[in-house]
Length: 131
Image 1 (cartoon, rainbow, N blue to C red):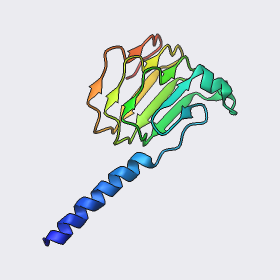
Image 2 (tube, rainbow, N blue to C red):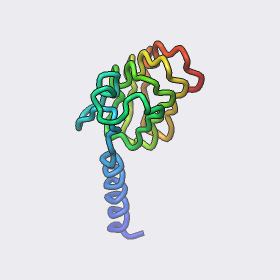
Image 3 (spheres, rainbow, N blue to C red):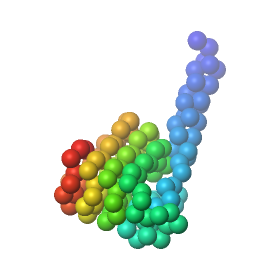
Image 4 (cartoon, one colour):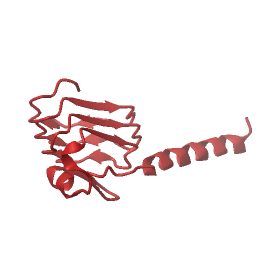
């Protein structure tokens, strides 16, 4: 293979990886910025959606390197949280999933860069059946 073709493939793969880290839509019940996100009772109640009618929270292609402490805290009636297709996430911090009394399932899938899950990342989840 010609050297320019190899260079083109490397450059293209880097662009696709960066693009996948930017292709993210913040869920209505959350608050998101360029560097972090929070989905809590406060952000849920402040949202314009019917806060208690949302049962499933799906986050795909998160552009962040970590799921921060209290990213998911005291959400109302959320039974399933799914995080998937996020090539940027390397770290889930302590108490990222905290005090979610209705939560039955957490699904973390297709996150190839995930390296660290801190002790206590999943705390006070009395109804959790599936992780």
